[in-house]
Amino acid sequence: MLVLANLASTLFMTGLIWLIQLVHYPLFAQVGRDEFVNYEDMHRRMITPVVGPVMLLELVTTMGLLVKRPETMPTWAAWTGFGLAAVIWLSTALLQVPEHGVLSNGFNAAAHQRLVSTNWLRTVAWSLRSLLMLWCVSRSYDPATLR
Image (cartoon, rainbow, N blue to C red):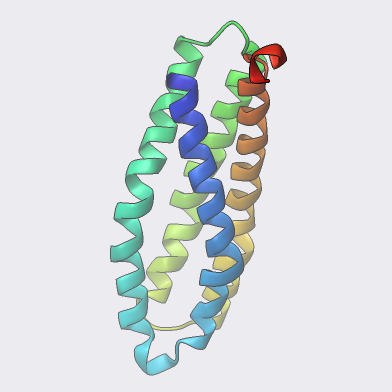
């Protein structure tokens, strides 16, 4: 169950981060200066309850896999998954949150560009986590039982 909860939360966040990266963050530049402070505030208030619980579930289950790793999951895979989760959390705290802080005072083209460009780190890390977890889960299934 730990593996499936980790896989589900990782896949959810991967899909969400791609949507944010390719659609939502680029649209920040189209909001308009007069509306932007309110828009940024609403974004932060509305996105947090969506991503917060799922990110926490992913982190907790990732750490759980270090302690209670299935036999089919190599040790290196559990630690790689943890390393990628650490990259995501550090990037969020050190790169994206500060740029949102700047943007909360009004649209700033440089801060917006930094937000979009640094968010690629999370996008790639979550994509790699998804591939890793899909591979790990696939190792636990017998192809004969999938017919």
